[in-house]
Amino acid sequence: MKPILPAIIAAFASLAGPAFAAGGERISVKGEIIDTWCYFSGVMGGPDAVVGTAHHTCALWCSAGGIPVGLLAEDGTVYMVLKIEGSADSASGDTQLRLASHVIEADGLLYERDGLKYLVVEEVVNDLDIEVLSHDSYGPVPPFAVPEKDQ
Image 1 (tube, rainbow, N blue to C red):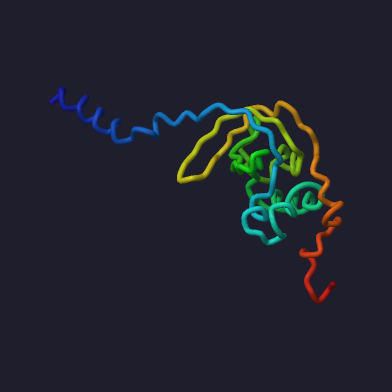
Image 2 (cartoon, rainbow, N blue to C red):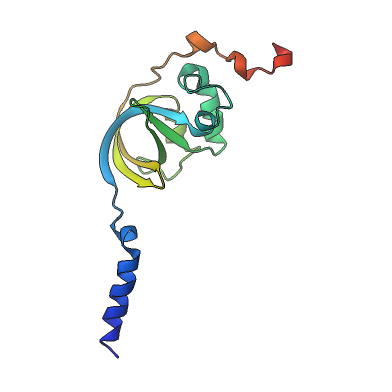
């Protein structure tokens, strides 16, 4: 019976395949830490309205409320951030709140599944602060965020 055990182990290992081989691809990326709910839902306006200074306060509220953060890269790719520098909080952690709306240069591991890109940021190489001064275009409270009866 002993010869069967290695065959069974080999069979199960072959079924698991990619699950054991998923090590992630090392990448360096530059982009803004974003609030994924407002970015993907469009609830606060289009993609230009949910970045930078005009959206900073909302980004803080969403992260503090448990909405995972993302990284909007310069090429428009959105990465769902799973971890930043060892913090397992994908939202509401001190690191995520400190970096909300900041443009960062990051080194980390990219994982892809079902068309989604996930990023484990191993190091924030450079924190460039908030670079997108969108309040100039949208004001501190964008008009689309105010109910019509109050305008």
